[in-house]
Structure formats: structure tokens, C-alpha cells
Length: 553
Image (cartoon, rainbow, N blue to C red; front, side):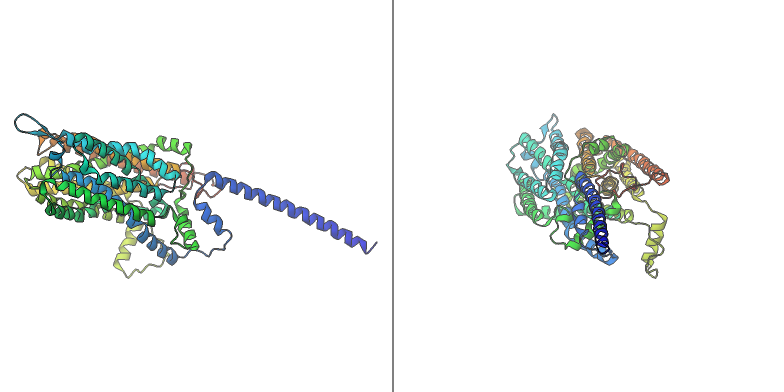
């Protein structure tokens, strides 16, 4: 019996231990099940990488490792979406340049009036209908791009728009060109929001402040080689019908780029084959501070409703409209303004247009560089012997949020250009030309506005909706402005520039209001006693749901 007692006790103890182990296992399964259920509920792609990393011990992410990865992302992702954005601008530039080389005459985009004058109202409608198609296509095609592999859908849209572009010379008149421009606008409307979403999948907020302007500076810098190419194309064939050669060239280039985009642009860091598993983990984990998630294929109605009811989104749309209207005025009508106001022939007009691209490009880059400055930790090791590092540290510590300030500064420069166009005597050609170039500075604010939309929005569906609303607003500004140019007011166009100045000033006021709302909300969250009970960085929560989210301004 004595020898049996320990045995029974051992068996009993073993039974108790087994029960405890089973209970623990049950708890673990329950917790694991709840976690899995929550992951399925949010369905953010980042979870796939982080979940895999749970089974593979990961060493801390070093600064050198992250720097090397960022450099690789910059060389792989940024050039592709910059070229895609530049090609969108090229199509619009082709219309305005084509107007100088026979497009208006060949497609009868004018109506003869008494006295030997011509009404170019049809040309204005052709410019506008593109943006109508853009407004229609943006919500539909961007939603499809979210539900399906984003980069693959982008490449498909680019392919179709290249085909539509190359078919432009087949248009026989006003009606067929209207249809072509509408379809083209629809296709391009799905690409811009998708590019912005892709940018948010790869970069931190402070990095987005510079990369978004780089994206739009491509439009400006692309103008110089583009106009040089147009200049050469015009000399190759008959000058009277040179606009057809321009569209053939752009169509072929766009179709080739679609195949490049399909081959080299991944849908997200999760599917990037050129990254190792460790690099994919770092690419995702480094975005945790964004508190905005990576990407989710689920369309959430609550996020959509929040986007359309958020006062900050509404103000951002108004800011975008007021800021983009001047760029729209000059973008479409600058060739006509220069040729009629300064008496330049078509070829000389092409040369005079080149500086507009440089102004747009540098205003985006300079503005983006200032916006990307972030506070520097005083304990960090920075080479203070470098004057540049010392100045950057001073600026970063003194000015922590500079995005709205840069937008306002660029708007003031643009207002100055509008005032020159309005008041400088017509005999002062150089002053008038300087006005055109200064107005273009407002395009530098576009990168800041889209960057704010990207950085101040969380949740996949809400980001999609806000991006779409911003680009719809840009299109709406371009729809409204062509009506301001009346043939009877040529070459001064006083109404166009008066309305432009009013919108610019309103945009400055709205920018200040937006900054005030962001500051107030951040302070409210900082003072809130409510504690966060879980990490919502990759939970596909919106910026209003996630109390850890902070707005930039």
C-alpha cells in the first residue's frame, strides 16, 4: 500500500497537470481564435507578414537596415508612379499644344462669327469633358482597384488609355473627339487615386511629405523634354497636321509603359518578390507609426460614411478646388494666352512654355523638402560640424509642422502672378510672361494637398474615398475654369484672372482653418484620459476611430 500510494498520488497529480494544461491550451486556442477572428475582421494585408514573423524570431530593426530598404523602395517604386503621373500630364499637354498645330482647325473646334472672328467654345468643351469623364471614372475604377490587385488594375487602365490616345487622330470632328476625351478621362481617373494609395503602402508620413510632391514634380520636369520632343516631331512631318504625330507618339509610349508597370510594380510590400522575407517584415513594421494600416480588400460602409461626413475632408476639398483652379487656368490655356497675348508664333510658344515645367517641378520639390523636415532627437548622433546638418536641426526643432505654411507661401506667389496678369500693361511682355510662370507655383501646393489627404487619413476604405474625393475636386476645378476664358476678353482675360485671385485668397483662409482644426483635435487627444487597450496600427481603423492617430499640418 505504501508503495502504491505515491503511485496513485502521482497519477492524480498527473491528471491535475493534464487538466491545467488542457485549460491553458483551451485559453490559448480561444485567444488565438479571437485574434484570428479580429485579423479576419480587419483583413489588413500587413497582418500576413506580421503573423509569419511571429514564428520567426526577428531582430530589432536598425537605422542602417531601414535606410537601405528605403533607398531600394525609392528606386523601385517612385520612378514607376512618377512616369505614370507624367504621362497623364502629357496627354493634357498634347491637347493644348495640338491647338497650335492644326487640331482646332482639322476637328472644327471653332465656330465662325461675324466680323471674321472665331469662337473657341468647342475647344473649351473638349478640355472640360475629359474632367467630366475623370469625375465619373474615379469612384468606380478606384473601387475596383482596391478590391482587386491594385498595381495590375493600374497597368490595365494605362494600357486602355494608351489605346484610346493612339486612336485620337482617327477622330473626324467635334463629336467624336468629345467621346474620346470622355473615355480617356474615365480611364485616367482610376489611376491617380491608386497611385496615391500605393504611395501610402510604402512610406511613412514624414516620407510621404516629400514623395507626394516628387510625384507631382514629375509633371513639371517632364514638360521640358516633352515640349522638346513635340518641337522635334513638328519638324519631322507636315506642320499643319503635326498634332496627329504627337498623339501617335504618346499612344505608343503609354502602351509600352503599361507592360513595364505590369511587370515591375508590386501590389504591396507583401507581394514584392524583390524583397526578402526579412525586408518585407521591415517594410511593413516601419509603417506601424502611421497608425493607418497597409491595405485591405474589404469595402467598409462605415468608413465611407465617415469620409463624407468628416469636416476636415470637406475643408480639404475646398482648399484643393481653390488651389488647383489657377493651375487649371494656365495648364489648358497657357499656349493660347502666350500666343495671343505676346504675339508668339507656335514654335516660339513651345519654347516659352518650357519654363512653366521648371517652375512647377521646383515648387513641388522645394515645398516637399520643407514639409518633410521632422523634429530631431537631441540625443541622436548628428554631425554638428556640418553647417547643413546644424541648420536642418534648428529648422526641425523650431518648425515641426510646415505643410500648411508651404501651401500658403506657394499660394501667395501664385497670387502675385495673377496680379501681374491682371494689372501689368500689355506692352510689358516680360512682366506678363513672369505672371504666367508665377501662377504655376500653385501647382507646388498640389503635392502638399494630396500629401495631407494621404497622411491625415487612416483605414483602407476611407483612404480610398478621400483620395477619390480630392481627385474629383481637382477635376471639378478644371471643369469650371475654362468657362472663364471668353474670346471677347482676349488677350487680357480679366474675368478669368479676377476669379482666380478670389479663389486663391479663399484657399489661403481655408488652409488656416484646416490647420486650426488639426491642432485642436491633436490637443484634445493628447489631453484625453482614455487609454488605448490595443494596438490599432494594422487594424484597418480610421483616423477618427484610432485615438493614437495624430494629424499633420
